[in-house]
Length: 147
Image 1: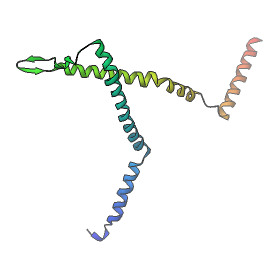
Image 2: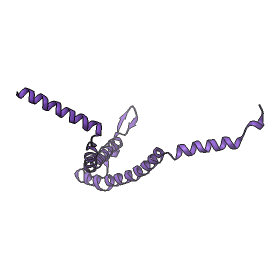
Image 3: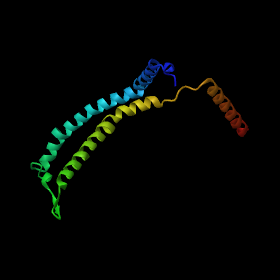
């Protein structure tokens, strides 16, 4: 193997070009923006659940999270299911808030956009000509049936 035939500069530039093509594609940038916005949105939902909804639920079930200390002892092993139940309720509340916010609250905005997008495009010249021929044929059939 002749080392003089290797051109490390060419290989480095090729690798750089490939990386640049991958990293700056629209999908990668969109994904990165989605992850960042998703993280911020997650903080908003967590704040809503922790500081608004859970205190309201605390009014219905007074106490300082005594459920976290619920446990079951089997053969000397503690199974702390209370904390799991608390996390499960928290998950259900968060997923409910996400559902109502994204589907029910923002859904009406998306439906309006879908209605605008759903309007069919105007027919092409070929389609218009075919529709005219169809209408003329229907008219001839109707006239022959009437006579």
